[in-house]
Each structure stands twice: as structure tokens, then as C-alpha cells.
Length: 310
Figure (cartoon, rainbow, N blue to C red):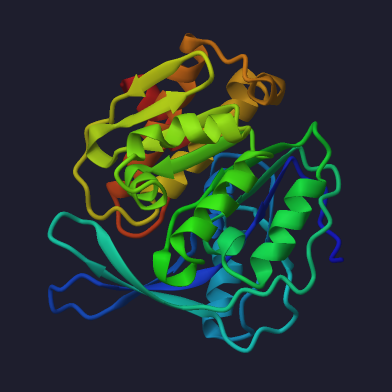
């Protein structure tokens, strides 16, 4: 197993290059991406010491990923040795700013990271649900000490994940150990077709303590066993939505760590006021990201300024 530096947060999952076609004749642009990478990068930008366990190639795209993460102070553990190439996702930007993706990715997790003294472990998306690497991620999550806060975002990519029923079972198995689960309304509809409104209740029943469901421009909802809190979106001029959900996730994790405490999240005793506060922080983090191209989440200073101005 690879040795991870000591850090409050460990993120495990895919790293890739988003090749973005805006359809305006300007040609494709390349951005570092991948949902777990974006969460790790967002946590680093918010001042949370973070280790990111991932795999990518020793090529120009891999060098770009290394430099990008270093810019946020994120330490990297390579889990697959010298991968042959760095994964890519071709994103076509639609008229409303949303992105449609085509992926070229393998995920193996040949050398799982050592958790060390991490107090938060985040997993999600392709890294958590695509075989063969997902098997190692799930085994690691299920082996963790109960005092470690696990956070999870399925960030559904149907073409890269098991069939619907199998993916749903995997998501609920992660929720049995993850105190915090975040998913979009689109994720909920794919996992529970025709019953998306029951997703939060089902994941809480599976074992989660807090479930956040995002609804794009319509805001988000935070659910616990005893409370449901609606969170509005901070008004902004959207450039694109790349990384919006990931910035919400990193903002949510940072808010839990810095504002309400890991123990409160683990126990499921968050109050309405605490839920509203961490939801406001997560939403503001997401809104700041969609106001600029690519997955560029806010720094701690930028987020603090936005929260003060709101």
C-alpha cells in the first residue's frame, strides 16, 4: 500500500483532462478535472490540508494535473504506478451552460493508499463505482474506523458505471458507511427512476446521517433523520457548470470540518441552524465556481468575502 502524508482529508478517485468544446468556433480548451480531483482541489483552495489518491499518466496531461494540484497545496499519491496515459473527458457545452461528456478512462487502484490519521475520507463518481478500482475503494471505506468521517458523491456517469440496479446497490452500500452523501437531482432520478424524491430518505435509511440533494439553479436541500432544510442559490452569471457540484461538495466538507465539527456530522445531531449554515457555504462555493470557466473553485478568502457580502 502507498504511504499517504498525514492530513485531515484524504480524497480517492479519478483525475482526468476535460476537453471542452463551447461550440463558438474557438476550438477545444483543456482543463484539469475529474469529480474527486475537483473536490480535493477545492478543499486545498479552502485551506483544508488534503491528500489526493489517484492515477494518471506520465505525459503532458499528467504534468498539468500535478501542477494544478500543487497550486492548491494538495499532496498526491499515485495508485497505479505509471499509467499508460491520462484519462480524458470531452465536454460539449450546451446553450444553458450545462456539459455533456464523452469519457476515455480506466480505473484500477492497484495500490490503495494508506489512510493514516485522516479524519475525513471522500470518495465518489467513477472512482467509487467503476470496476475494477471501485472494489478496492469500497473495501477501504468499509474498513475505516468509525471515527473517520466518510463523504460520498455518486456523480452518476451511466456509460461508465454498472447497470442501474447494481449501481443503486453500490450507492446504498457506500451510504451505509458514509455519514455525508451528496447527489444531484439527476443522480437521484437515474438511481430511483420515477421516485427521485425518495432518494434522500432511502440513503438515510441505508445509514447516511446527512444527505444533500442539489437542484441546479433551484438550490439544494439538506436532509437528516429529523430535519429538512432548503438552501437557495446565490445569484450569479453562469459561464458553465463544470465542477459546480464538486465545489458544493468541497464547500460542504470544509463547512462541516470548520463550522460544526466532525462529531456532529457523524452522530447526525446537526441542528436546523447548522444545516442552513453549511448549506449556505456549500451553495456559495458552487456559485462562485460557475461564474468562471472550468472547475475553478473559490479560495478561502474569496468564499469568506462572498459570504460576508451576501
